[in-house]
Length: 456
Image (cartoon, rainbow, N blue to C red; front, side):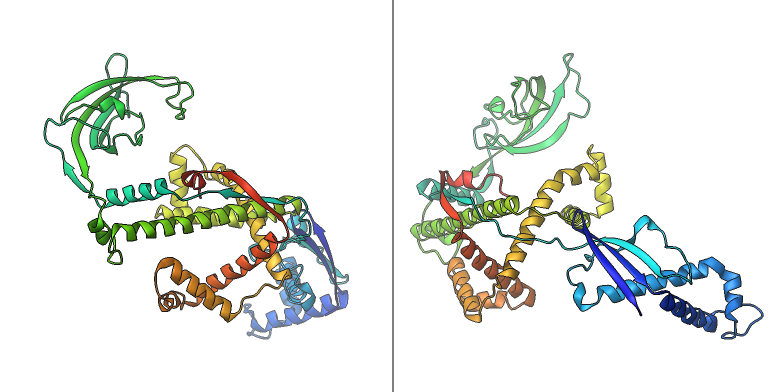
Protein backbone atom coordinates (compact mmCIF):
# COMPACT_ATOMS: atom_id res chain seq x y z
CA UNK A 1 0.00 0.00 0.00
CA UNK A 2 1.38 3.40 -1.01
CA UNK A 3 1.37 5.58 2.13
CA UNK A 4 3.17 8.80 2.94
CA UNK A 5 3.39 10.28 6.41
CA UNK A 6 4.38 13.49 8.14
CA UNK A 7 5.16 13.73 11.87
CA UNK A 8 5.00 17.04 13.73
CA UNK A 9 5.81 17.40 17.43
CA UNK A 10 3.41 19.69 19.29
CA UNK A 11 3.20 20.94 22.88
CA UNK A 12 2.98 18.71 25.97
CA UNK A 13 4.94 15.90 24.32
CA UNK A 14 2.25 15.12 21.77
CA UNK A 15 2.58 14.55 18.03
CA UNK A 16 0.44 15.17 15.00
CA UNK A 17 0.67 12.38 12.44
CA UNK A 18 -0.70 13.08 8.96
CA UNK A 19 -0.95 10.10 6.63
CA UNK A 20 -1.98 9.92 2.97
CA UNK A 21 -3.09 6.73 1.23
CA UNK A 22 -2.93 6.82 -2.58
CA UNK A 23 -6.36 6.85 -4.25
CA UNK A 24 -5.69 3.64 -6.16
CA UNK A 25 -5.00 1.84 -2.88
CA UNK A 26 -8.10 3.41 -1.33
CA UNK A 27 -10.26 2.16 -4.19
CA UNK A 28 -8.66 -1.30 -4.16
CA UNK A 29 -9.07 -1.65 -0.38
CA UNK A 30 -12.70 -0.53 -0.62
CA UNK A 31 -13.41 -3.03 -3.36
CA UNK A 32 -11.76 -5.94 -1.51
CA UNK A 33 -13.42 -5.16 1.83
CA UNK A 34 -16.81 -4.72 0.18
CA UNK A 35 -16.44 -8.12 -1.47
CA UNK A 36 -15.67 -9.73 1.93
CA UNK A 37 -18.78 -8.12 3.43
CA UNK A 38 -20.87 -9.39 0.52
CA UNK A 39 -19.72 -12.97 1.12
CA UNK A 40 -20.71 -12.95 4.78
CA UNK A 41 -23.73 -10.70 5.08
CA UNK A 42 -27.29 -12.09 5.13
CA UNK A 43 -29.92 -10.05 3.22
CA UNK A 44 -33.48 -11.32 2.64
CA UNK A 45 -33.92 -12.53 -0.98
CA UNK A 46 -30.27 -13.50 -1.44
CA UNK A 47 -28.31 -16.54 -0.45
CA UNK A 48 -25.37 -15.99 1.95
CA UNK A 49 -22.30 -15.16 -0.14
CA UNK A 50 -24.31 -14.17 -3.23
CA UNK A 51 -25.25 -10.58 -2.38
CA UNK A 52 -24.27 -8.23 -5.26
CA UNK A 53 -22.00 -5.47 -4.06
CA UNK A 54 -24.16 -2.77 -5.63
CA UNK A 55 -27.13 -4.03 -3.56
CA UNK A 56 -24.95 -3.78 -0.45
CA UNK A 57 -24.01 -0.21 -1.34
CA UNK A 58 -27.61 0.76 -2.07
CA UNK A 59 -28.83 -0.64 1.24
CA UNK A 60 -26.10 0.65 3.56
CA UNK A 61 -24.67 3.60 1.59
CA UNK A 62 -22.50 6.09 3.43
CA UNK A 63 -22.52 4.18 6.74
CA UNK A 64 -20.86 1.21 5.02
CA UNK A 65 -18.32 3.46 3.33
CA UNK A 66 -17.55 5.16 6.68
CA UNK A 67 -16.97 1.79 8.33
CA UNK A 68 -14.63 0.64 5.56
CA UNK A 69 -12.73 3.94 5.62
CA UNK A 70 -12.44 3.67 9.42
CA UNK A 71 -10.95 0.19 9.09
CA UNK A 72 -8.53 1.48 6.44
CA UNK A 73 -7.41 4.28 8.74
CA UNK A 74 -6.83 1.78 11.57
CA UNK A 75 -4.86 -0.52 9.27
CA UNK A 76 -2.76 2.35 7.93
CA UNK A 77 -2.00 3.61 11.44
CA UNK A 78 -1.05 0.15 12.62
CA UNK A 79 1.34 -0.32 9.66
CA UNK A 80 2.98 3.07 10.30
CA UNK A 81 3.34 2.66 14.06
CA UNK A 82 4.69 -0.89 13.88
CA UNK A 83 7.43 0.12 11.45
CA UNK A 84 11.09 -0.02 12.44
CA UNK A 85 11.40 3.76 12.14
CA UNK A 86 8.45 4.46 14.47
CA UNK A 87 10.04 3.94 17.90
CA UNK A 88 10.39 7.68 18.54
CA UNK A 89 6.76 8.51 17.78
CA UNK A 90 4.74 5.51 18.98
CA UNK A 91 1.80 6.46 21.21
CA UNK A 92 1.94 5.88 24.94
CA UNK A 93 -0.04 2.80 26.05
CA UNK A 94 -2.72 5.01 27.62
CA UNK A 95 -2.92 7.55 24.75
CA UNK A 96 -5.19 6.35 21.95
CA UNK A 97 -4.61 8.23 18.65
CA UNK A 98 -7.63 10.40 17.91
CA UNK A 99 -8.66 11.95 14.63
CA UNK A 100 -8.05 15.67 14.50
CA UNK A 101 -11.42 17.30 14.78
CA UNK A 102 -12.90 13.96 15.90
CA UNK A 103 -14.44 13.23 12.50
CA UNK A 104 -13.67 11.11 9.47
CA UNK A 105 -12.09 12.78 6.42
CA UNK A 106 -14.01 13.09 3.17
CA UNK A 107 -15.14 9.67 1.95
CA UNK A 108 -14.22 10.01 -1.70
CA UNK A 109 -13.08 6.93 -3.65
CA UNK A 110 -11.64 9.08 -6.39
CA UNK A 111 -9.19 10.95 -4.16
CA UNK A 112 -6.24 10.19 -1.94
CA UNK A 113 -7.29 9.49 1.65
CA UNK A 114 -5.60 12.00 3.96
CA UNK A 115 -6.19 11.98 7.70
CA UNK A 116 -4.50 13.43 10.79
CA UNK A 117 -4.35 11.92 14.25
CA UNK A 118 -3.03 13.42 17.48
CA UNK A 119 -1.64 11.46 20.43
CA UNK A 120 0.87 11.59 23.27
CA UNK A 121 4.38 10.16 23.02
CA UNK A 122 7.18 9.57 25.50
CA UNK A 123 8.88 12.89 26.30
CA UNK A 124 12.01 13.76 24.41
CA UNK A 125 14.58 14.43 27.11
CA UNK A 126 18.13 15.72 26.92
CA UNK A 127 19.99 15.74 30.22
CA UNK A 128 23.00 17.88 29.37
CA UNK A 129 23.08 20.76 31.84
CA UNK A 130 24.85 19.93 35.11
CA UNK A 131 26.23 23.42 35.74
CA UNK A 132 25.80 25.01 39.13
CA UNK A 133 24.36 21.92 40.80
CA UNK A 134 25.22 21.79 44.50
CA UNK A 135 23.89 18.91 46.59
CA UNK A 136 24.06 19.53 50.32
CA UNK A 137 24.54 16.57 52.62
CA UNK A 138 22.87 16.88 56.03
CA UNK A 139 25.19 16.50 59.01
CA UNK A 140 23.60 14.14 61.52
CA UNK A 141 25.05 12.03 64.30
CA UNK A 142 23.60 9.16 66.29
CA UNK A 143 24.35 9.62 69.97
CA UNK A 144 23.26 8.45 73.39
CA UNK A 145 19.97 10.41 73.20
CA UNK A 146 18.84 8.58 70.08
CA UNK A 147 19.76 5.21 71.60
CA UNK A 148 17.90 6.05 74.82
CA UNK A 149 14.83 7.19 72.86
CA UNK A 150 14.78 3.86 71.03
CA UNK A 151 15.24 1.95 74.29
CA UNK A 152 12.28 3.84 75.73
CA UNK A 153 10.17 2.83 72.74
CA UNK A 154 11.22 -0.79 73.26
CA UNK A 155 10.28 -0.52 76.94
CA UNK A 156 6.85 0.85 76.03
CA UNK A 157 6.26 -1.88 73.45
CA UNK A 158 7.10 -4.49 76.06
CA UNK A 159 5.25 -2.82 78.91
CA UNK A 160 2.31 -4.34 80.78
CA UNK A 161 -0.71 -2.02 80.86
CA UNK A 162 -2.46 -2.17 84.24
CA UNK A 163 -5.51 -0.45 85.75
CA UNK A 164 -4.66 2.08 88.41
CA UNK A 165 -6.26 1.70 91.82
CA UNK A 166 -9.62 3.39 92.34
CA UNK A 167 -9.02 6.83 93.78
CA UNK A 168 -5.60 7.23 92.16
CA UNK A 169 -5.31 10.49 90.16
CA UNK A 170 -4.50 10.98 86.50
CA UNK A 171 -0.79 11.56 86.04
CA UNK A 172 1.49 12.26 83.12
CA UNK A 173 2.05 9.21 80.86
CA UNK A 174 -1.13 7.51 82.12
CA UNK A 175 -3.42 6.02 79.49
CA UNK A 176 -6.88 7.50 80.06
CA UNK A 177 -10.30 6.82 78.61
CA UNK A 178 -12.68 9.77 78.65
CA UNK A 179 -16.13 10.83 77.51
CA UNK A 180 -16.41 14.46 76.50
CA UNK A 181 -18.77 16.99 74.98
CA UNK A 182 -18.58 20.64 74.07
CA UNK A 183 -20.99 23.00 75.81
CA UNK A 184 -22.74 26.16 74.70
CA UNK A 185 -22.80 29.22 76.96
CA UNK A 186 -26.14 28.08 78.42
CA UNK A 187 -24.73 24.66 79.27
CA UNK A 188 -26.46 22.78 76.45
CA UNK A 189 -24.47 20.31 74.36
CA UNK A 190 -23.04 21.46 71.03
CA UNK A 191 -24.54 19.22 68.36
CA UNK A 192 -22.16 16.56 67.11
CA UNK A 193 -19.49 17.26 69.74
CA UNK A 194 -20.07 14.26 72.01
CA UNK A 195 -17.43 11.51 72.04
CA UNK A 196 -17.45 8.30 74.04
CA UNK A 197 -14.54 6.10 75.14
CA UNK A 198 -11.76 8.30 73.72
CA UNK A 199 -8.32 6.92 74.65
CA UNK A 200 -5.01 8.79 74.70
CA UNK A 201 -1.76 9.03 76.65
CA UNK A 202 -1.59 12.04 78.95
CA UNK A 203 1.22 14.35 77.89
CA UNK A 204 1.28 13.17 74.27
CA UNK A 205 -0.96 16.00 73.05
CA UNK A 206 -2.74 13.48 70.86
CA UNK A 207 -6.23 14.78 71.53
CA UNK A 208 -8.24 17.38 69.64
CA UNK A 209 -8.68 19.94 72.43
CA UNK A 210 -5.18 19.46 73.97
CA UNK A 211 -6.54 18.93 77.48
CA UNK A 212 -3.59 16.88 78.83
CA UNK A 213 -2.76 19.31 81.65
CA UNK A 214 -6.42 20.05 82.41
CA UNK A 215 -7.26 16.47 83.45
CA UNK A 216 -4.21 15.95 85.68
CA UNK A 217 -5.41 14.99 89.16
CA UNK A 218 -8.84 13.81 88.04
CA UNK A 219 -10.00 10.39 89.28
CA UNK A 220 -11.94 7.58 87.67
CA UNK A 221 -15.64 8.49 87.48
CA UNK A 222 -15.00 12.19 88.02
CA UNK A 223 -16.58 14.81 85.70
CA UNK A 224 -15.06 18.23 85.24
CA UNK A 225 -15.95 21.32 83.22
CA UNK A 226 -12.94 22.77 81.45
CA UNK A 227 -12.80 26.18 79.78
CA UNK A 228 -9.93 26.66 77.34
CA UNK A 229 -8.96 29.77 75.42
CA UNK A 230 -6.95 29.08 72.29
CA UNK A 231 -4.36 31.44 70.88
CA UNK A 232 -5.16 33.09 67.55
CA UNK A 233 -2.04 31.43 66.12
CA UNK A 234 -3.03 27.93 67.24
CA UNK A 235 -2.12 25.23 64.73
CA UNK A 236 -5.73 24.03 64.70
CA UNK A 237 -7.54 26.61 62.55
CA UNK A 238 -10.94 25.46 63.83
CA UNK A 239 -9.94 26.32 67.42
CA UNK A 240 -7.64 29.30 66.80
CA UNK A 241 -8.82 32.40 68.72
CA UNK A 242 -11.80 30.60 70.27
CA UNK A 243 -12.85 29.89 73.84
CA UNK A 244 -14.32 26.43 74.36
CA UNK A 245 -16.16 24.92 77.33
CA UNK A 246 -15.94 21.14 77.72
CA UNK A 247 -17.48 18.57 80.00
CA UNK A 248 -15.01 15.71 80.52
CA UNK A 249 -15.59 12.45 82.41
CA UNK A 250 -12.72 10.07 83.15
CA UNK A 251 -13.91 6.47 82.76
CA UNK A 252 -10.61 4.58 83.02
CA UNK A 253 -7.01 5.22 84.04
CA UNK A 254 -4.23 2.83 83.18
CA UNK A 255 -0.50 2.88 83.73
CA UNK A 256 2.27 1.28 81.74
CA UNK A 257 4.42 -0.96 83.89
CA UNK A 258 7.70 -0.51 82.08
CA UNK A 259 10.21 -3.36 82.26
CA UNK A 260 13.66 -2.60 83.63
CA UNK A 261 16.41 -1.75 81.17
CA UNK A 262 18.49 -4.83 81.76
CA UNK A 263 19.78 -8.02 80.18
CA UNK A 264 16.41 -9.74 80.68
CA UNK A 265 14.68 -7.13 78.52
CA UNK A 266 17.30 -7.56 75.81
CA UNK A 267 16.74 -11.31 75.82
CA UNK A 268 12.96 -10.80 75.66
CA UNK A 269 13.39 -8.62 72.57
CA UNK A 270 15.36 -11.28 70.69
CA UNK A 271 17.23 -14.45 71.44
CA UNK A 272 20.21 -13.07 69.53
CA UNK A 273 20.85 -10.60 72.40
CA UNK A 274 22.55 -11.87 75.54
CA UNK A 275 23.08 -8.52 77.27
CA UNK A 276 21.66 -5.01 77.23
CA UNK A 277 24.92 -3.85 75.64
CA UNK A 278 24.25 -6.24 72.72
CA UNK A 279 20.85 -4.61 72.22
CA UNK A 280 22.31 -1.11 72.42
CA UNK A 281 24.99 -1.96 69.86
CA UNK A 282 22.35 -3.27 67.46
CA UNK A 283 20.16 -0.21 68.01
CA UNK A 284 23.09 2.09 67.16
CA UNK A 285 23.87 0.04 64.05
CA UNK A 286 20.25 0.17 62.87
CA UNK A 287 19.93 3.90 63.58
CA UNK A 288 23.14 4.58 61.65
CA UNK A 289 21.79 2.58 58.70
CA UNK A 290 18.47 4.44 58.83
CA UNK A 291 20.32 7.75 58.98
CA UNK A 292 22.46 6.89 55.98
CA UNK A 293 19.43 5.77 53.94
CA UNK A 294 17.54 8.96 54.74
CA UNK A 295 20.50 11.23 53.93
CA UNK A 296 20.99 9.37 50.67
CA UNK A 297 17.29 9.76 49.84
CA UNK A 298 17.38 13.51 50.51
CA UNK A 299 20.56 13.91 48.46
CA UNK A 300 19.08 12.04 45.53
CA UNK A 301 15.89 14.08 45.70
CA UNK A 302 17.87 17.32 45.72
CA UNK A 303 20.01 16.20 42.78
CA UNK A 304 16.99 15.20 40.71
CA UNK A 305 15.09 18.40 41.53
CA UNK A 306 18.04 20.44 40.25
CA UNK A 307 18.41 18.29 37.13
CA UNK A 308 14.70 18.70 36.38
CA UNK A 309 15.00 22.46 36.81
CA UNK A 310 18.08 22.76 34.59
CA UNK A 311 16.85 20.34 31.89
CA UNK A 312 13.19 21.26 31.37
CA UNK A 313 10.82 19.17 29.27
CA UNK A 314 7.06 18.78 28.92
CA UNK A 315 5.05 15.85 30.19
CA UNK A 316 2.14 14.47 28.15
CA UNK A 317 -1.23 15.09 29.75
CA UNK A 318 -2.17 11.43 29.51
CA UNK A 319 0.94 10.43 31.48
CA UNK A 320 0.07 12.83 34.30
CA UNK A 321 -3.54 11.62 34.34
CA UNK A 322 -2.45 7.96 34.41
CA UNK A 323 -0.20 8.69 37.40
CA UNK A 324 -3.00 10.52 39.25
CA UNK A 325 -5.44 7.68 38.53
CA UNK A 326 -2.87 5.20 39.84
CA UNK A 327 -2.45 7.18 43.06
CA UNK A 328 -6.22 7.34 43.49
CA UNK A 329 -6.53 3.57 43.04
CA UNK A 330 -3.72 2.98 45.56
CA UNK A 331 -5.48 5.25 48.04
CA UNK A 332 -8.67 3.22 47.55
CA UNK A 333 -6.72 0.02 48.27
CA UNK A 334 -5.32 1.55 51.47
CA UNK A 335 -8.88 2.34 52.60
CA UNK A 336 -9.95 -1.16 51.48
CA UNK A 337 -12.59 0.20 49.15
CA UNK A 338 -13.19 0.79 45.44
CA UNK A 339 -12.15 3.96 43.57
CA UNK A 340 -15.84 4.73 43.02
CA UNK A 341 -16.66 4.35 46.71
CA UNK A 342 -13.65 6.50 47.57
CA UNK A 343 -15.18 9.26 45.43
CA UNK A 344 -18.25 9.20 47.69
CA UNK A 345 -16.18 9.11 50.89
CA UNK A 346 -14.14 12.13 49.82
CA UNK A 347 -17.28 14.00 48.77
CA UNK A 348 -18.80 13.35 52.20
CA UNK A 349 -15.70 14.91 53.82
CA UNK A 350 -16.28 18.17 51.94
CA UNK A 351 -13.73 17.64 49.18
CA UNK A 352 -13.92 16.30 45.65
CA UNK A 353 -11.77 13.94 43.64
CA UNK A 354 -10.93 16.79 41.27
CA UNK A 355 -9.74 19.08 44.08
CA UNK A 356 -7.55 16.36 45.58
CA UNK A 357 -6.05 15.39 42.23
CA UNK A 358 -5.28 19.06 41.60
CA UNK A 359 -3.36 19.17 44.90
CA UNK A 360 -1.41 16.07 43.86
CA UNK A 361 -0.56 17.24 40.34
CA UNK A 362 2.59 19.20 41.22
CA UNK A 363 4.15 16.35 43.20
CA UNK A 364 3.16 13.83 40.52
CA UNK A 365 4.81 15.91 37.79
CA UNK A 366 8.03 16.21 39.82
CA UNK A 367 8.07 12.48 40.50
CA UNK A 368 7.45 11.59 36.85
CA UNK A 369 10.11 13.97 35.57
CA UNK A 370 12.63 12.64 38.08
CA UNK A 371 11.84 9.07 37.06
CA UNK A 372 12.20 9.90 33.37
CA UNK A 373 15.56 11.62 33.93
CA UNK A 374 16.87 8.59 35.82
CA UNK A 375 15.65 6.18 33.11
CA UNK A 376 17.13 8.40 30.39
CA UNK A 377 20.55 8.56 32.05
CA UNK A 378 20.57 4.82 32.76
CA UNK A 379 19.92 4.18 29.08
CA UNK A 380 22.31 6.82 27.70
CA UNK A 381 25.16 5.73 29.98
CA UNK A 382 24.44 2.05 29.38
CA UNK A 383 24.55 1.30 33.11
CA UNK A 384 24.49 -2.40 33.89
CA UNK A 385 25.41 -4.69 36.78
CA UNK A 386 27.41 -7.90 36.85
CA UNK A 387 26.56 -11.11 38.74
CA UNK A 388 29.50 -10.33 41.02
CA UNK A 389 27.98 -6.96 41.93
CA UNK A 390 24.67 -8.60 42.80
CA UNK A 391 26.53 -11.11 44.98
CA UNK A 392 28.13 -8.15 46.76
CA UNK A 393 24.66 -6.66 47.31
CA UNK A 394 23.50 -9.94 48.84
CA UNK A 395 26.42 -9.85 51.26
CA UNK A 396 25.76 -6.21 52.21
CA UNK A 397 22.05 -6.85 52.84
CA UNK A 398 22.90 -9.91 54.95
CA UNK A 399 25.37 -7.91 57.06
CA UNK A 400 22.93 -5.02 57.56
CA UNK A 401 20.10 -7.30 58.69
CA UNK A 402 22.11 -9.83 60.69
CA UNK A 403 21.09 -12.78 58.52
CA UNK A 404 22.91 -15.20 56.23
CA UNK A 405 23.57 -14.64 52.54
CA UNK A 406 21.54 -17.76 51.78
CA UNK A 407 18.54 -16.22 53.57
CA UNK A 408 18.92 -13.07 51.47
CA UNK A 409 19.12 -15.10 48.27
CA UNK A 410 16.02 -17.02 49.28
CA UNK A 411 14.17 -13.71 49.63
CA UNK A 412 15.25 -12.64 46.14
CA UNK A 413 14.58 -15.96 44.42
CA UNK A 414 11.35 -14.45 43.09
CA UNK A 415 12.09 -13.02 39.65
CA UNK A 416 10.30 -9.75 40.32
CA UNK A 417 12.09 -9.18 43.63
CA UNK A 418 15.47 -9.86 42.04
CA UNK A 419 14.64 -7.52 39.16
CA UNK A 420 13.90 -4.80 41.71
CA UNK A 421 17.29 -5.40 43.36
CA UNK A 422 19.06 -5.23 39.98
CA UNK A 423 17.29 -1.96 39.10
CA UNK A 424 18.15 -0.50 42.50
CA UNK A 425 21.80 -1.47 42.08
CA UNK A 426 21.89 0.15 38.64
CA UNK A 427 20.49 3.36 40.05
CA UNK A 428 23.06 3.39 42.84
CA UNK A 429 25.82 3.11 40.23
CA UNK A 430 24.27 5.99 38.31
CA UNK A 431 24.12 8.19 41.40
CA UNK A 432 27.76 7.40 42.18
CA UNK A 433 28.67 8.64 38.70
CA UNK A 434 26.55 11.77 39.00
CA UNK A 435 27.96 12.74 42.40
CA UNK A 436 31.44 12.65 40.88
CA UNK A 437 30.26 15.21 38.31
CA UNK A 438 28.46 17.71 40.55
CA UNK A 439 29.37 19.59 43.72
CA UNK A 440 28.50 17.90 47.01
CA UNK A 441 28.93 20.07 50.11
CA UNK A 442 28.20 19.80 53.81
CA UNK A 443 24.69 20.81 54.74
CA UNK A 444 23.30 22.03 58.05
CA UNK A 445 23.70 20.08 61.25
CA UNK A 446 20.42 18.61 62.40
CA UNK A 447 19.09 16.15 64.92
CA UNK A 448 18.22 12.59 64.05
CA UNK A 449 14.52 13.35 64.67
CA UNK A 450 14.55 16.41 62.38
CA UNK A 451 16.13 14.32 59.64
CA UNK A 452 12.97 12.25 59.42
CA UNK A 453 10.47 15.10 59.60
CA UNK A 454 8.14 15.33 56.60
CA UNK A 455 9.21 11.86 55.51
CA UNK A 456 6.84 10.46 52.90
